[in-house]
Image 1 (cartoon, one colour):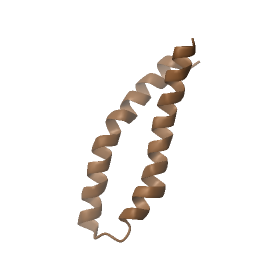
Image 2 (tube, one colour):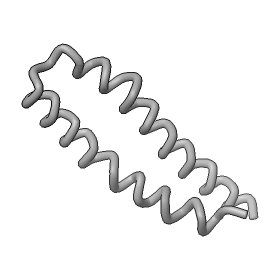
Image 3 (tube, helix red, strand yellow):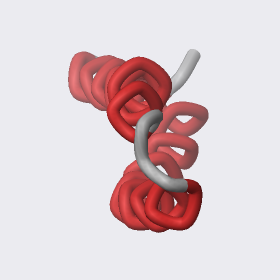
Image 4 (cartoon, rainbow, N blue to C red):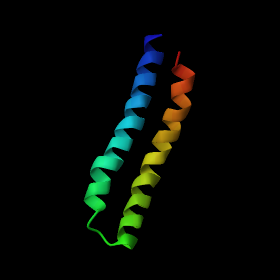
Length: 65
């Protein structure tokens, strides 16, 4: 039971923390960049982030209540 709760919370932290990073850090840091560079940066960042999101999407309902 404790392991499921821990996995659930960890998955939520990964998902919400990643979204916080994308909105409040990456968006502001990429703001002064030219649009083609900005799109490439977002693409690279999300390519690394979305596998973690999909893992969280699978883990959260399985371990949720």
